[in-house]
Image 1 (spheres, helix red, strand yellow):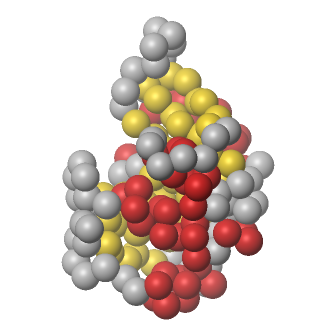
Image 2 (tube, helix red, strand yellow; image 1 turned 180 degrees about the horizontal axis):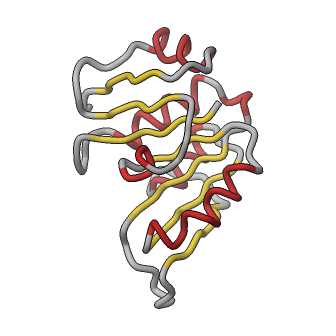
Length: 142
């Protein structure tokens, strides 16, 4: 399963929706990726950093705490990072990416939009995750 969680803006509930999905189907061994525009401290155009410690602070730590097998943070120039990110995703069995920009660039099975419309129930999310058809669902901010 390949899922992208986009949003209507900042603080729209994207990370919360990603974590709900991870908790619903942890047996899939998800690779979860957070994409942000923040420039890397190293001065590089971009960097892809793997998170290794679960926790409540930080999106990638929250992914691991919710059941992701692996979690990455992509920072910086998204276009420059895209070839490396695509290789990383190709090696993953099931992945979920938190990024509105990615929804226009990376082929996937489903795009969910956080912050628009009524939130899907866990049953609706589970049904979506059980299929591989192209769909769009919505999550209201919490």
